[in-house]
Length: 405
Image (cartoon, rainbow, N blue to C red; front, side, top):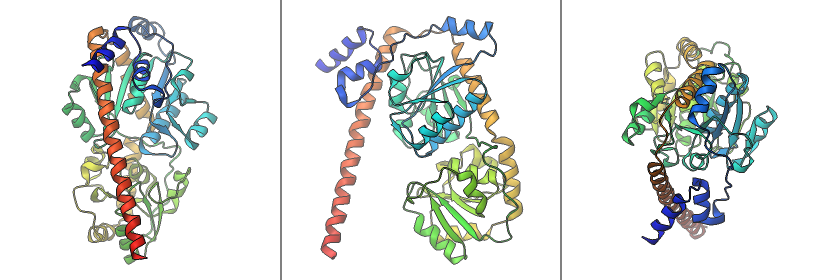
């Protein structure tokens, strides 16, 4: 009870959530407070009504801007699209790498501490749970749900969040199951930068070169075995392969068949490669004109991985390789998954969220934030347990190896 009293006392002092976290957990969080007040809704409404076309200042949060993961690619695509439309972009991520450096070169304001955000954002485009919380004091948050598996990407209700966006039907259903109001939830599918991912020449009659794009380990052997049996030379890219590329759009032009899921599969399809949708979580099959619309609604992700990941299933998918089907699939994704519509949809939702009249009730706000902090504590404990178990398993493997040799 004492800890709860301490938390409520902090809220009663009107502290920002990031300040509360800092007070509760100390230097471990290494966050700083953005010293600006909540922008009044009325002022934002007036700006929209009286100055049509006024550039927006959008703060986008993510856990990292480093190595082209799914959420990082979404952030990059959206930020580039907003900036090309004349809007001002600010990006906040605690882990920065090569991607952050490249984005800075293109003019984006990229930081790893919220105190380095020097302008008041009109919209906080929040990805990932903890980063969303640290941005709460700035203005009108919006939450982007990208995963049905990772809790750090799961939606949590809070009265300061005006809208949620899901990338596929599975994420939409997860949002609804967590109590997100249907009228505050939109579905915006993943997109492809069509200027970057050009269309490749027509595919050969039989696939000769294959590319495995993955962050998973467990299915790699099956893919390699299936490709070897079909005389396909296979390369790999992604965290699980130890190989990375900052020019995937160029790499894809040299491959006939790609094994991937989600955003990477969509990009490969838009280029014109034949795509087998699979990863360590399961197997869907060869992307073709019969399934492309339904699978897109599931983001070519976990929602379609209904079959076991076996060499036999992979062999069957490869046997269905068809250059004509791949060209038709490419034309479809280039028509419906362009980045221009993706950016326009986000701007429409930002505008809608900014014109919401409701001001969050103070008691509801601090109780929701207390619940959010509690959730973060539970999540952190679970992650620590997982890390401990993984470490124990790793040490057991080492000991077993030492016994064998």
